[in-house]
Image 1 (cartoon, one colour):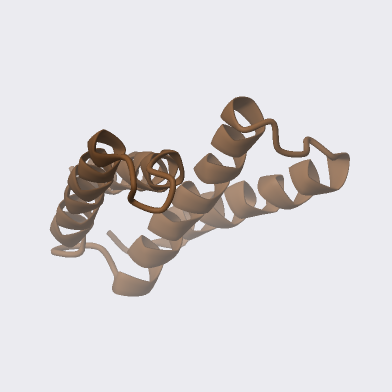
Image 2 (cartoon, one colour):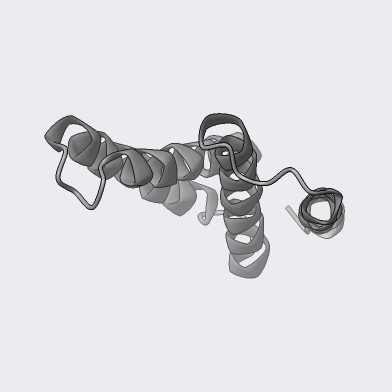
Length: 106
């Protein structure tokens, strides 16, 4: 169950960053409220996963999901670069997260 919490926390982290971008510096109230909601959900679920997962593993995977997901959202929604080098380094984040999952004690 803790891994499920962690994955959903990472997805909420992506939503948090996306809504923050859409809030345009917290000047658009609906997106600002969604930013706060997504961040709260993300932190809460991360805290639940930390009840049984090692803190380093959980935090690295949470930030990895957030970073990789944000890059993908940026490419799709905000027309950011899809350069092959970015895709290579994005895949390295995924490989690192999978490696941490495979070697975690819980």
